[in-house]
Image (tube, rainbow, N blue to C red; front, side):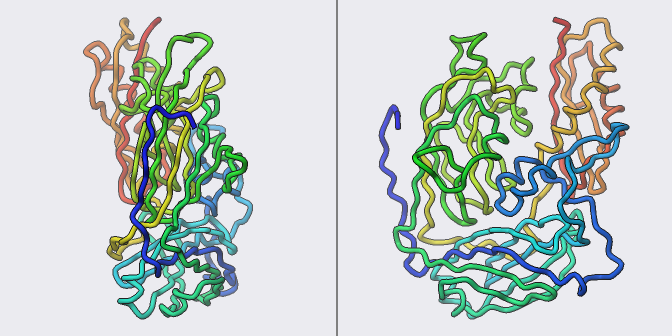
Length: 424
Protein backbone atom coordinates (compact mmCIF):
# COMPACT_ATOMS: atom_id res chain seq x y z
CA UNK A 1 0.00 0.00 0.00
CA UNK A 2 1.54 3.32 -1.05
CA UNK A 3 0.28 6.08 1.24
CA UNK A 4 1.52 9.60 1.95
CA UNK A 5 0.68 9.28 5.63
CA UNK A 6 0.00 6.43 8.03
CA UNK A 7 -3.03 6.32 10.28
CA UNK A 8 -4.03 4.05 13.14
CA UNK A 9 -7.67 3.05 13.15
CA UNK A 10 -9.08 2.00 16.51
CA UNK A 11 -12.78 1.28 16.05
CA UNK A 12 -14.99 1.10 19.12
CA UNK A 13 -15.39 -2.53 20.10
CA UNK A 14 -18.77 -4.07 19.46
CA UNK A 15 -20.57 -5.63 22.40
CA UNK A 16 -19.96 -9.35 22.74
CA UNK A 17 -23.68 -10.12 22.39
CA UNK A 18 -24.13 -8.39 19.04
CA UNK A 19 -25.46 -10.51 16.18
CA UNK A 20 -25.66 -10.15 12.42
CA UNK A 21 -28.91 -11.22 10.79
CA UNK A 22 -29.07 -12.03 7.08
CA UNK A 23 -32.43 -12.32 5.33
CA UNK A 24 -31.28 -14.85 2.78
CA UNK A 25 -34.12 -15.97 0.52
CA UNK A 26 -37.69 -17.24 0.30
CA UNK A 27 -39.81 -19.75 -1.55
CA UNK A 28 -43.33 -18.45 -2.19
CA UNK A 29 -46.34 -20.66 -2.92
CA UNK A 30 -47.78 -19.03 -6.02
CA UNK A 31 -51.09 -20.88 -5.57
CA UNK A 32 -51.77 -18.76 -2.48
CA UNK A 33 -51.43 -15.47 -4.37
CA UNK A 34 -54.24 -13.51 -5.98
CA UNK A 35 -55.35 -15.60 -8.96
CA UNK A 36 -56.07 -12.48 -11.03
CA UNK A 37 -52.69 -10.85 -10.48
CA UNK A 38 -50.55 -10.20 -13.54
CA UNK A 39 -46.79 -10.12 -13.93
CA UNK A 40 -45.25 -6.65 -14.02
CA UNK A 41 -42.55 -5.15 -16.18
CA UNK A 42 -40.20 -5.05 -13.21
CA UNK A 43 -38.72 -2.35 -10.99
CA UNK A 44 -36.59 0.39 -12.58
CA UNK A 45 -33.35 -0.18 -10.70
CA UNK A 46 -30.22 1.12 -12.34
CA UNK A 47 -27.64 -1.37 -13.55
CA UNK A 48 -25.28 -0.25 -10.81
CA UNK A 49 -27.86 -0.53 -8.01
CA UNK A 50 -28.47 -4.15 -9.01
CA UNK A 51 -24.78 -4.96 -9.22
CA UNK A 52 -24.24 -3.53 -5.71
CA UNK A 53 -27.10 -5.57 -4.21
CA UNK A 54 -26.34 -9.27 -3.60
CA UNK A 55 -29.84 -10.50 -4.45
CA UNK A 56 -30.06 -8.53 -7.69
CA UNK A 57 -26.65 -9.17 -9.25
CA UNK A 58 -28.00 -12.04 -11.33
CA UNK A 59 -30.58 -9.59 -12.76
CA UNK A 60 -28.01 -7.02 -13.83
CA UNK A 61 -28.83 -7.43 -17.51
CA UNK A 62 -32.49 -6.75 -16.75
CA UNK A 63 -31.70 -3.66 -14.67
CA UNK A 64 -31.21 -0.20 -16.08
CA UNK A 65 -33.48 1.21 -18.78
CA UNK A 66 -33.76 1.57 -22.53
CA UNK A 67 -36.17 3.16 -24.97
CA UNK A 68 -38.46 1.22 -27.24
CA UNK A 69 -38.27 1.46 -31.04
CA UNK A 70 -40.32 4.66 -30.98
CA UNK A 71 -38.08 6.25 -28.38
CA UNK A 72 -40.97 6.72 -25.99
CA UNK A 73 -41.58 3.85 -23.56
CA UNK A 74 -39.10 3.11 -20.79
CA UNK A 75 -38.45 -0.62 -20.50
CA UNK A 76 -36.10 -2.90 -18.56
CA UNK A 77 -32.93 -3.34 -20.59
CA UNK A 78 -33.52 -7.11 -20.89
CA UNK A 79 -36.32 -9.57 -20.06
CA UNK A 80 -36.60 -10.78 -16.47
CA UNK A 81 -35.89 -14.50 -15.99
CA UNK A 82 -39.27 -15.03 -14.29
CA UNK A 83 -42.74 -13.55 -14.75
CA UNK A 84 -44.40 -14.05 -11.37
CA UNK A 85 -47.08 -11.50 -10.31
CA UNK A 86 -45.15 -10.42 -7.23
CA UNK A 87 -42.16 -8.22 -6.32
CA UNK A 88 -41.39 -9.61 -2.83
CA UNK A 89 -39.50 -7.95 0.00
CA UNK A 90 -39.16 -8.73 3.69
CA UNK A 91 -39.61 -6.42 6.66
CA UNK A 92 -38.03 -7.11 10.06
CA UNK A 93 -39.04 -5.25 13.21
CA UNK A 94 -37.89 -5.51 16.80
CA UNK A 95 -38.71 -2.75 19.25
CA UNK A 96 -37.99 0.54 17.54
CA UNK A 97 -35.70 -1.05 14.96
CA UNK A 98 -37.13 -1.50 11.48
CA UNK A 99 -35.35 -3.09 8.51
CA UNK A 100 -36.55 -3.56 4.94
CA UNK A 101 -34.91 -5.48 2.13
CA UNK A 102 -35.18 -4.27 -1.43
CA UNK A 103 -37.87 -5.92 -3.59
CA UNK A 104 -36.80 -8.55 -6.09
CA UNK A 105 -38.89 -8.19 -9.25
CA UNK A 106 -41.29 -10.83 -10.61
CA UNK A 107 -40.16 -13.93 -8.75
CA UNK A 108 -41.47 -16.64 -6.42
CA UNK A 109 -37.92 -17.45 -5.29
CA UNK A 110 -36.36 -14.13 -4.20
CA UNK A 111 -32.79 -14.02 -2.95
CA UNK A 112 -31.96 -10.94 -0.89
CA UNK A 113 -28.77 -11.65 1.04
CA UNK A 114 -29.67 -8.56 3.10
CA UNK A 115 -27.68 -8.26 6.36
CA UNK A 116 -28.01 -6.02 9.41
CA UNK A 117 -26.55 -5.80 12.91
CA UNK A 118 -28.55 -6.06 16.15
CA UNK A 119 -26.88 -4.99 19.39
CA UNK A 120 -26.94 -6.66 22.80
CA UNK A 121 -28.81 -3.75 24.40
CA UNK A 122 -31.80 -4.17 22.06
CA UNK A 123 -31.85 -7.95 22.44
CA UNK A 124 -31.87 -7.59 26.24
CA UNK A 125 -34.83 -5.20 26.10
CA UNK A 126 -37.13 -7.04 23.67
CA UNK A 127 -38.74 -10.49 23.69
CA UNK A 128 -39.60 -11.05 20.05
CA UNK A 129 -39.27 -9.72 16.51
CA UNK A 130 -41.63 -9.73 13.53
CA UNK A 131 -41.00 -10.90 9.97
CA UNK A 132 -43.40 -9.51 7.34
CA UNK A 133 -43.65 -10.48 3.69
CA UNK A 134 -44.68 -7.65 1.35
CA UNK A 135 -45.44 -7.33 -2.32
CA UNK A 136 -43.97 -4.06 -3.61
CA UNK A 137 -46.47 -2.44 -5.96
CA UNK A 138 -45.29 1.04 -6.92
CA UNK A 139 -44.59 4.39 -5.34
CA UNK A 140 -45.34 3.95 -1.63
CA UNK A 141 -47.79 1.09 -2.15
CA UNK A 142 -47.03 -2.29 -0.63
CA UNK A 143 -49.32 -5.20 0.06
CA UNK A 144 -48.80 -7.22 3.22
CA UNK A 145 -48.91 -10.96 2.48
CA UNK A 146 -48.14 -12.45 5.87
CA UNK A 147 -46.44 -12.12 9.26
CA UNK A 148 -44.51 -14.34 11.66
CA UNK A 149 -42.94 -13.81 15.07
CA UNK A 150 -39.42 -14.77 16.07
CA UNK A 151 -38.23 -15.05 19.66
CA UNK A 152 -35.14 -13.23 20.90
CA UNK A 153 -33.81 -16.64 21.93
CA UNK A 154 -33.81 -17.58 18.22
CA UNK A 155 -32.05 -14.30 17.38
CA UNK A 156 -29.28 -15.08 19.87
CA UNK A 157 -28.65 -18.63 18.62
CA UNK A 158 -26.29 -18.78 15.64
CA UNK A 159 -27.24 -20.83 12.62
CA UNK A 160 -29.56 -21.17 9.65
CA UNK A 161 -33.26 -20.58 10.29
CA UNK A 162 -36.58 -21.02 8.49
CA UNK A 163 -39.86 -19.24 9.17
CA UNK A 164 -43.27 -19.58 7.55
CA UNK A 165 -44.43 -16.09 6.64
CA UNK A 166 -47.82 -16.11 4.93
CA UNK A 167 -47.44 -17.99 1.63
CA UNK A 168 -43.64 -18.11 1.93
CA UNK A 169 -40.90 -20.08 3.63
CA UNK A 170 -38.24 -17.54 4.52
CA UNK A 171 -34.63 -18.55 5.13
CA UNK A 172 -32.48 -16.39 7.38
CA UNK A 173 -29.13 -16.64 9.12
CA UNK A 174 -27.82 -15.60 12.55
CA UNK A 175 -24.11 -14.98 13.15
CA UNK A 176 -22.64 -13.99 16.50
CA UNK A 177 -20.18 -11.11 16.30
CA UNK A 178 -17.03 -11.19 18.44
CA UNK A 179 -15.88 -8.02 20.21
CA UNK A 180 -13.24 -7.39 17.53
CA UNK A 181 -15.60 -7.94 14.61
CA UNK A 182 -13.76 -5.85 12.04
CA UNK A 183 -12.55 -6.48 8.51
CA UNK A 184 -9.90 -4.69 6.47
CA UNK A 185 -9.50 -4.71 2.70
CA UNK A 186 -6.49 -3.23 0.89
CA UNK A 187 -6.57 -3.05 -2.90
CA UNK A 188 -6.18 -0.88 -5.99
CA UNK A 189 -8.97 0.91 -7.85
CA UNK A 190 -8.01 1.11 -11.54
CA UNK A 191 -8.75 4.27 -13.49
CA UNK A 192 -9.29 2.48 -16.79
CA UNK A 193 -12.54 0.72 -15.82
CA UNK A 194 -16.03 2.12 -15.30
CA UNK A 195 -17.79 1.56 -12.00
CA UNK A 196 -20.46 -0.73 -13.50
CA UNK A 197 -17.80 -2.86 -15.24
CA UNK A 198 -15.86 -3.24 -11.99
CA UNK A 199 -19.05 -4.15 -10.14
CA UNK A 200 -20.03 -6.74 -12.74
CA UNK A 201 -16.83 -8.79 -12.44
CA UNK A 202 -15.72 -8.13 -8.85
CA UNK A 203 -15.66 -11.08 -6.42
CA UNK A 204 -17.31 -10.61 -3.01
CA UNK A 205 -14.42 -12.25 -1.18
CA UNK A 206 -10.95 -10.84 -1.68
CA UNK A 207 -8.36 -12.98 -3.42
CA UNK A 208 -4.63 -12.23 -3.28
CA UNK A 209 -5.18 -8.54 -2.51
CA UNK A 210 -7.22 -7.98 -5.67
CA UNK A 211 -10.18 -5.71 -6.29
CA UNK A 212 -13.26 -6.72 -4.29
CA UNK A 213 -16.92 -5.79 -3.89
CA UNK A 214 -16.94 -5.37 -0.11
CA UNK A 215 -20.01 -6.87 1.66
CA UNK A 216 -21.49 -4.42 4.17
CA UNK A 217 -24.37 -4.98 6.61
CA UNK A 218 -26.86 -2.27 7.53
CA UNK A 219 -25.61 -0.61 10.70
CA UNK A 220 -21.91 -1.38 10.20
CA UNK A 221 -19.37 1.44 10.20
CA UNK A 222 -17.37 1.83 6.99
CA UNK A 223 -14.20 3.87 6.60
CA UNK A 224 -12.39 4.34 3.29
CA UNK A 225 -8.96 5.96 2.95
CA UNK A 226 -7.45 6.55 -0.47
CA UNK A 227 -4.18 7.77 -1.96
CA UNK A 228 -2.47 7.84 -5.33
CA UNK A 229 -3.03 9.61 -8.65
CA UNK A 230 -4.88 8.80 -11.85
CA UNK A 231 -4.60 10.31 -15.32
CA UNK A 232 -7.90 10.96 -17.09
CA UNK A 233 -7.30 10.85 -20.85
CA UNK A 234 -3.64 10.02 -20.24
CA UNK A 235 -2.62 9.84 -23.89
CA UNK A 236 -3.97 13.25 -24.85
CA UNK A 237 -3.24 15.05 -21.58
CA UNK A 238 -0.38 13.17 -19.86
CA UNK A 239 0.34 16.14 -17.59
CA UNK A 240 -3.19 16.17 -16.12
CA UNK A 241 -3.41 14.17 -12.92
CA UNK A 242 -6.05 13.75 -10.23
CA UNK A 243 -5.93 12.56 -6.65
CA UNK A 244 -8.90 10.91 -4.90
CA UNK A 245 -10.58 14.32 -4.51
CA UNK A 246 -10.64 14.63 -8.31
CA UNK A 247 -10.28 17.74 -10.44
CA UNK A 248 -12.82 20.42 -11.22
CA UNK A 249 -15.22 19.22 -13.90
CA UNK A 250 -14.90 21.19 -17.13
CA UNK A 251 -18.29 22.61 -18.05
CA UNK A 252 -18.06 21.25 -21.59
CA UNK A 253 -17.14 17.77 -20.34
CA UNK A 254 -19.78 17.17 -17.64
CA UNK A 255 -21.25 14.38 -19.78
CA UNK A 256 -18.09 12.35 -19.15
CA UNK A 257 -18.85 12.12 -15.42
CA UNK A 258 -20.77 9.06 -14.31
CA UNK A 259 -24.58 9.42 -14.32
CA UNK A 260 -25.55 10.56 -10.84
CA UNK A 261 -22.21 12.34 -10.34
CA UNK A 262 -22.52 15.33 -12.68
CA UNK A 263 -24.08 18.09 -10.62
CA UNK A 264 -21.13 19.80 -8.96
CA UNK A 265 -19.00 16.66 -8.42
CA UNK A 266 -15.34 16.60 -9.37
CA UNK A 267 -14.19 14.64 -12.39
CA UNK A 268 -12.01 11.55 -11.79
CA UNK A 269 -12.69 11.63 -8.03
CA UNK A 270 -13.07 8.39 -6.07
CA UNK A 271 -16.79 7.53 -5.92
CA UNK A 272 -18.75 4.72 -4.33
CA UNK A 273 -21.96 2.72 -4.57
CA UNK A 274 -23.47 0.66 -1.74
CA UNK A 275 -26.71 -1.06 -2.57
CA UNK A 276 -29.05 1.61 -3.91
CA UNK A 277 -27.02 4.56 -2.58
CA UNK A 278 -24.23 6.40 -4.41
CA UNK A 279 -21.84 8.96 -2.94
CA UNK A 280 -18.54 10.78 -3.26
CA UNK A 281 -15.65 9.25 -1.32
CA UNK A 282 -12.53 11.33 -2.05
CA UNK A 283 -9.47 10.90 0.14
CA UNK A 284 -11.41 9.75 3.19
CA UNK A 285 -14.97 8.97 4.16
CA UNK A 286 -16.43 7.34 7.26
CA UNK A 287 -20.10 6.58 7.70
CA UNK A 288 -22.70 4.26 9.20
CA UNK A 289 -24.27 2.11 6.50
CA UNK A 290 -27.99 2.81 6.23
CA UNK A 291 -28.45 -0.09 3.84
CA UNK A 292 -26.95 -3.50 3.20
CA UNK A 293 -25.11 -4.23 -0.01
CA UNK A 294 -21.78 -4.44 -1.78
CA UNK A 295 -19.41 -1.48 -1.65
CA UNK A 296 -18.13 -0.66 -5.15
CA UNK A 297 -15.35 1.92 -5.57
CA UNK A 298 -14.30 3.52 -8.87
CA UNK A 299 -13.39 6.86 -10.45
CA UNK A 300 -15.90 9.42 -11.64
CA UNK A 301 -15.41 9.00 -15.37
CA UNK A 302 -17.57 7.56 -18.12
CA UNK A 303 -14.82 7.29 -20.75
CA UNK A 304 -12.15 5.24 -19.03
CA UNK A 305 -10.34 3.33 -21.79
CA UNK A 306 -7.72 6.07 -22.20
CA UNK A 307 -7.08 6.55 -18.47
CA UNK A 308 -4.00 5.60 -16.49
CA UNK A 309 -3.06 5.05 -12.86
CA UNK A 310 -4.80 3.64 -9.80
CA UNK A 311 -6.06 4.75 -6.40
CA UNK A 312 -4.75 2.68 -3.51
CA UNK A 313 -7.49 2.19 -0.92
CA UNK A 314 -7.92 0.79 2.57
CA UNK A 315 -11.45 -0.14 3.61
CA UNK A 316 -12.32 -0.93 7.24
CA UNK A 317 -15.73 -2.36 8.17
CA UNK A 318 -16.77 -2.91 11.78
CA UNK A 319 -19.83 -3.01 14.03
CA UNK A 320 -20.39 0.00 16.32
CA UNK A 321 -20.33 -0.32 20.10
CA UNK A 322 -23.88 1.03 20.20
CA UNK A 323 -26.52 0.79 17.49
CA UNK A 324 -28.80 3.84 17.27
CA UNK A 325 -32.30 2.62 16.55
CA UNK A 326 -34.18 3.71 13.44
CA UNK A 327 -37.88 4.22 14.19
CA UNK A 328 -40.23 1.82 12.47
CA UNK A 329 -42.56 3.18 9.82
CA UNK A 330 -42.86 2.98 6.07
CA UNK A 331 -40.64 0.59 4.19
CA UNK A 332 -37.11 1.71 3.47
CA UNK A 333 -36.88 0.29 -0.05
CA UNK A 334 -35.47 2.44 -2.84
CA UNK A 335 -36.58 5.97 -2.05
CA UNK A 336 -37.12 8.52 -4.79
CA UNK A 337 -35.75 7.75 -8.22
CA UNK A 338 -32.24 6.51 -8.88
CA UNK A 339 -30.44 9.51 -10.46
CA UNK A 340 -28.39 7.13 -12.59
CA UNK A 341 -31.60 5.85 -14.19
CA UNK A 342 -32.85 9.39 -14.82
CA UNK A 343 -29.59 10.54 -16.38
CA UNK A 344 -29.35 7.41 -18.53
CA UNK A 345 -32.82 8.19 -19.88
CA UNK A 346 -31.88 11.80 -20.59
CA UNK A 347 -28.57 10.77 -22.17
CA UNK A 348 -30.48 8.51 -24.53
CA UNK A 349 -32.66 11.43 -25.66
CA UNK A 350 -30.27 14.38 -25.78
CA UNK A 351 -30.62 14.35 -29.57
CA UNK A 352 -34.15 15.65 -29.12
CA UNK A 353 -32.90 18.46 -26.90
CA UNK A 354 -30.29 19.58 -29.39
CA UNK A 355 -32.94 19.93 -32.07
CA UNK A 356 -33.75 23.17 -30.21
CA UNK A 357 -30.31 24.69 -30.78
CA UNK A 358 -31.38 25.99 -34.19
CA UNK A 359 -33.48 28.63 -32.44
CA UNK A 360 -30.43 30.83 -31.86
CA UNK A 361 -27.57 32.12 -33.97
CA UNK A 362 -25.26 32.08 -30.96
CA UNK A 363 -25.34 28.52 -29.56
CA UNK A 364 -22.78 29.13 -26.82
CA UNK A 365 -23.58 29.07 -23.14
CA UNK A 366 -25.22 27.10 -20.37
CA UNK A 367 -28.68 25.74 -19.61
CA UNK A 368 -29.83 23.93 -16.48
CA UNK A 369 -33.09 21.99 -16.70
CA UNK A 370 -35.00 21.13 -13.53
CA UNK A 371 -37.04 17.95 -13.85
CA UNK A 372 -39.54 17.03 -11.15
CA UNK A 373 -40.75 13.47 -11.69
CA UNK A 374 -44.16 12.80 -10.17
CA UNK A 375 -45.37 9.53 -8.66
CA UNK A 376 -46.89 8.47 -12.00
CA UNK A 377 -43.62 9.01 -13.90
CA UNK A 378 -44.57 12.28 -15.61
CA UNK A 379 -41.93 15.01 -15.69
CA UNK A 380 -42.62 18.64 -14.86
CA UNK A 381 -39.70 20.37 -16.58
CA UNK A 382 -38.60 23.97 -16.15
CA UNK A 383 -35.52 26.03 -16.99
CA UNK A 384 -33.65 26.68 -13.77
CA UNK A 385 -31.12 28.93 -15.50
CA UNK A 386 -29.99 29.79 -19.02
CA UNK A 387 -27.51 32.14 -20.67
CA UNK A 388 -29.37 35.21 -22.05
CA UNK A 389 -28.89 34.07 -25.66
CA UNK A 390 -30.25 30.59 -24.85
CA UNK A 391 -33.53 31.37 -23.10
CA UNK A 392 -35.63 30.32 -26.12
CA UNK A 393 -33.50 27.20 -26.55
CA UNK A 394 -34.03 26.32 -22.89
CA UNK A 395 -37.79 26.78 -23.18
CA UNK A 396 -37.84 24.51 -26.24
CA UNK A 397 -35.83 21.85 -24.40
CA UNK A 398 -38.18 22.03 -21.43
CA UNK A 399 -41.18 21.50 -23.72
CA UNK A 400 -39.60 18.44 -25.32
CA UNK A 401 -38.50 16.90 -22.02
CA UNK A 402 -42.01 17.39 -20.60
CA UNK A 403 -43.30 14.71 -22.98
CA UNK A 404 -40.93 12.04 -21.67
CA UNK A 405 -42.03 9.20 -19.42
CA UNK A 406 -39.88 8.24 -16.42
CA UNK A 407 -40.11 5.28 -14.04
CA UNK A 408 -42.43 6.00 -11.11
CA UNK A 409 -40.50 7.16 -8.04
CA UNK A 410 -41.58 6.83 -4.43
CA UNK A 411 -43.28 10.18 -3.93
CA UNK A 412 -41.58 12.73 -6.20
CA UNK A 413 -38.00 13.14 -7.35
CA UNK A 414 -36.19 16.28 -8.52
CA UNK A 415 -33.24 16.12 -10.91
CA UNK A 416 -31.05 18.94 -12.23
CA UNK A 417 -29.57 18.44 -15.68
CA UNK A 418 -26.85 20.93 -16.74
CA UNK A 419 -25.95 21.39 -20.41
CA UNK A 420 -23.06 23.38 -21.85
CA UNK A 421 -23.45 24.37 -25.51
CA UNK A 422 -20.66 25.38 -27.81
CA UNK A 423 -20.24 25.58 -31.57
CA UNK A 424 -16.56 24.67 -31.39
